[in-house]
View 1 (spheres, one colour):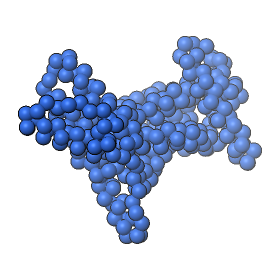
View 2 (spheres, helix red, strand yellow):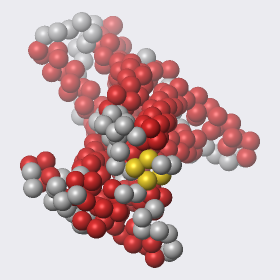
View 3 (cartoon, one colour):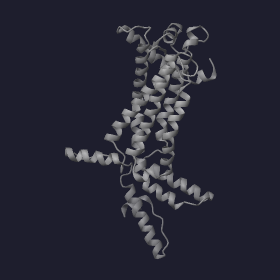
View 4 (cartoon, one colour):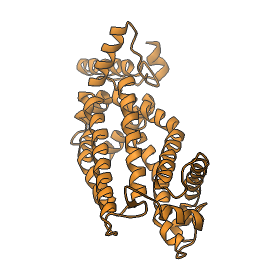
Length: 325
């Protein structure tokens, strides 16, 4: 077992256990153990199982992103305050104020990346399983996880629409494999673009869209589909199916979230409030960790500005004293 397989060991066992278990259930239900569609349904089941396990993390990510967008005006004030100041003391103060704001709001700026990062080991583990299935079936490689020689042979000899599940666009000459791989790569790239585009255009406030983070995300909208298209030519058909199904899950999940839990100040929130008003219901949104935080910060800033205009020194206040006032 190589170094890469050692790192992926638990993820390989998880993926292989789900695939083998679903293949066993499907064949007992009457499907052929040599049919490619049996393995396709097993792959779809793997996507559902993995994404269902990540649901609690996804909910936390949604709440964190909403809180992050709610404090976007305050964040822009901090950025404006330290704009053009490159000295070490100013940079340190900027970081302290920024992360202090995140902590006070209960928001995590890196929360959006966490679900993707967690999914990557499972993706690489599945790539190893599918990429070595043919070699295992021919006795040129050792079995991985629960994918023994018999199961690897079934996978390697299975096909859909005339394309072998272990074939790739770049390394196989079979026309059916190339056509199916190309279709899956296009669908995969388009669904990724739609998912990113609806998130930016429907679920972000004007203030959030003008932030540096949003501008970077806008670049990723166009870069990521290209990256997927370039790398997808090296992936087996079965892995392209996994990725495409996962994209459809993300797109549907995001549509549900945007419709029912829109970001504050976004076009989606206006539509949500209009629907709730039409039904005679009150719109419910995600609250900040400290609901009075924004009002307290605004009152403190106004008081500080008033004192500075009067020429008096601003006296520091504890949080308890500020709340009593």
